[in-house]
Length: 236
Image 1 (tube, rainbow, N blue to C red):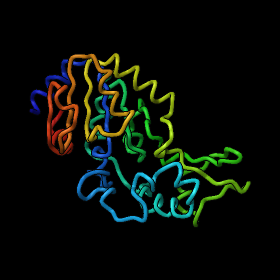
Image 2: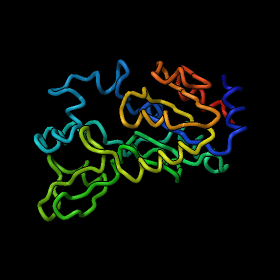
Image 3: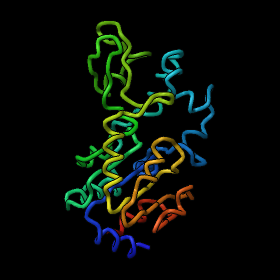
């Protein structure tokens, strides 16, 4: 498996990487849908609602309590997968990282070409005056974070019920459509419209790496059911 994957990478010059929560689990961040993931926690509301547009506007105290407890990830470090992708980018092979993650670990690893489909915890803005705030301000605030003008500060993350950022989504569409290799890793490929991006790939090699099966496995040239650490630590 490793030898086959390495050969595919060696033969490719226009690679796109599409990753989900499983990319960051080796850094100590829980994913969503595994048996011990975030969705297994007992909360007052279902997890999709806890991270929804409606929850943010209708139950702001509870939203921010959940958000701060779940996504205060400032001390988390990049893992072997993030570091390998940075190396692949430096070689000129990796043209874009398309990520569903909001943790900023690809940026922390030094990668430059990133499409943030679900936003990032590191950017926040006031809903009233649009002033920007960093993550520390939000996570260190008590209760609902407020701007000096009195407006509520909203994290620049895509909540359930909100549209994906147009520029990042358009870039992902363009690069995946033109890629000669697409590596999909650490995602269950169940969240739309992001998962449908796989259907746009018309290149030579589609690789899916995930602990569990996905509904797109049948389309792939190579499927590996293993941890990402076991795979990316063995690639050169």
